[in-house]
Amino acid sequence: MSWEVKKILVPTDGSPKAELAVEPALEIARLKGAEIVALSVLAAPFESSCFTGTGAAEGAQVIEELKVELAQKSAERVVARAEEAGIKARAVVLSGSPAEEILKVAEREDVDLIVMGTKGMTGTRRLLGSVAMSVISHAPCPVLTVREKEYSLPLYERARRM
Image (cartoon, rainbow, N blue to C red; front, side, top):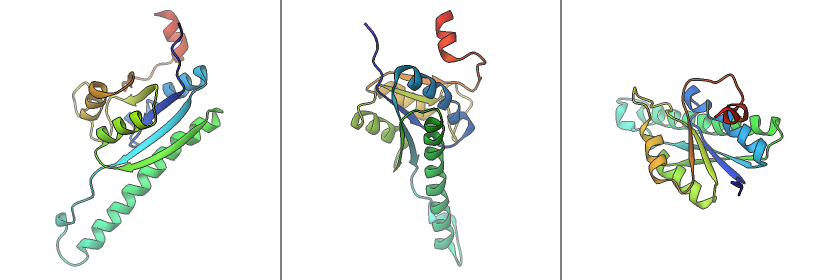
């Protein structure tokens, strides 16, 4: 019996740690003929109360616009890499709690696999970040997490040696 993978969700926040998951996801997609769904989630809006004085609201608006742009570019970079490899891909950008939105998209899109970094922009010294832990604990499908250490052997070659 073969494990069928038709759709792979790749959450990204654009950080180098999150980007490490892209290559293994593309490799699995290429081997299985799967589609990539690149997801970037905007966290809660920036608190304008952090700013005081003239231009506070404008400052918060500029930050929000930059966050939207970063999220779009992060997802689009994954799509571009997939398309360069001949893999069907599309970007999804949402707003909300990253873990919750990842889980909702996994369910709604009926994904077969989630491939993500162990930590993103908010990564701490723990082995797994809180977003990754939550996704692993509640995902409706298998989750492959990718650590910071990069491997020199292609994924399929490493798997053959196991």
